[in-house]
Length: 117
Image (cartoon, rainbow, N blue to C red):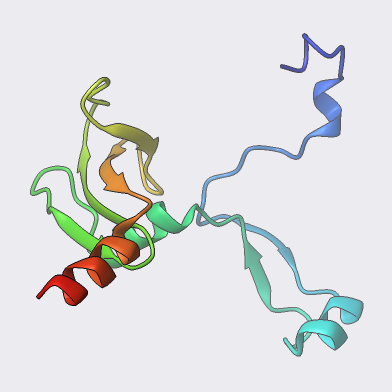
């Protein structure tokens, strides 16, 4: 995309590992956020990748995780993406992939089921 719009790579931040400390909370940010100055700030990961870490993300013994709220999903991890059957995203740790099958209407579906039952 950078080439398509003739933009220099230098305008983007570096790509970092999710657990890498990328900076510290500055005094001005501290006053706005109520976080103490100097608190480490990590690069971070997407909500889905973070959820997999919290669920014990593993490839050698994969887990199938069910999440539902306003959106719902089944997700797991794999060494390679399974394109065509799952949505695939890079995992927060290592060279693994998160495989996702989901809906953005989970909350509405649960409300509908409650009304019908």
